[in-house]
Length: 115
Length: 112
Image (cartoon, rainbow over all chains, first blue to last red; front, top):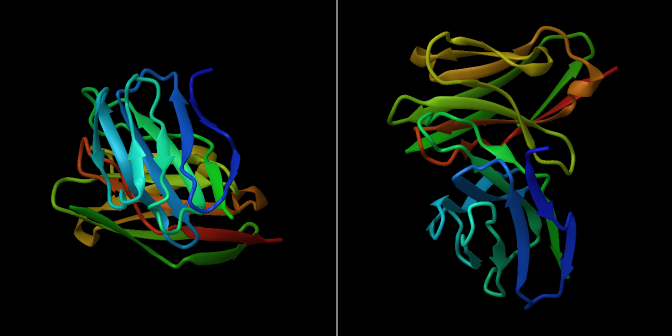
């Protein structure tokens, strides 16, 4: 089955610790995205990557970092500089080829709670 | 730049009644529009999308939406609500090969 895997489903960390959220896709998509979801706020873009070894900041990149060393993987690190990291994090991917209006496919999400 | 406004953070309907979820967009280029559904603690699933061509778009689970350029709207409808439709719905816009911009979502409750 093709799809996007995010692990773990639930993650707990102590304040001040960095934590890395995993996102893997086997859809052969070029583009990958990280969104943060808070109640009543919709989805806010953190980082995105259109191609391997390249990524761009989204609307709320402060306190986060990413890497894109492989096409299928786009891990997100939540650093201690992120003031309010507790949230639901969603990874997505997209076939950014000739059909520029393709939809984004989403993973199941990781709920991060910082204690 | 693109933006989306979803009118009503919470909509409640009776089972069997019409579902209408409102979405207005702003875009500096011809928009591509999407509706997604999210069940609790899950990812988003695509309901339907408008790219070009026919302005009335049919999606999964009996939902449809109509693109109205003059009104900059893309409202989502379903003739008869089912209990299983209770979820959060997100409207999104893209200007092309750019990340989707999402509205804040509308939570749909279905009353038996």
